[in-house]
Image (cartoon, rainbow, N blue to C red; front, side, top):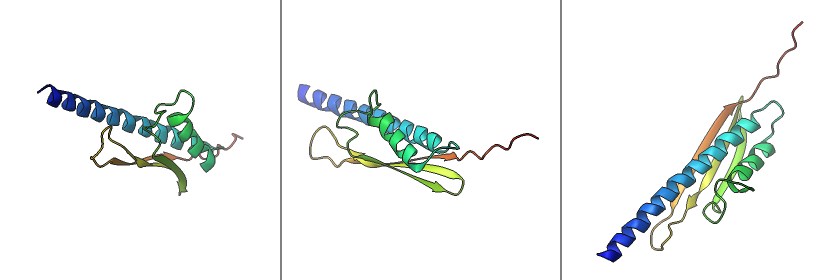
Length: 116
């Protein structure tokens, strides 16, 4: 009975960690899209900012949990699109990993015309 309770506790803790990880990836993607959509923003800025938010100093998901997450940024029309793909591994073997595909979009700022 104690073994079953411990297994359920580990499973519940793992699900909570996955939810935190998904939120961290979502935050990184949203912030990266916003930064890349600035007037002087680039695709490289977008991708490096996503990495910094997730894994940089003070990052939201440092350690091995975020190792399998990759970021890509692209411009589609007047929108900066940041995408994170990857998977989270369970803390115990025999269970398939959880795949994730998170996308953030932000409209690229148009240049502001000077008033006459």
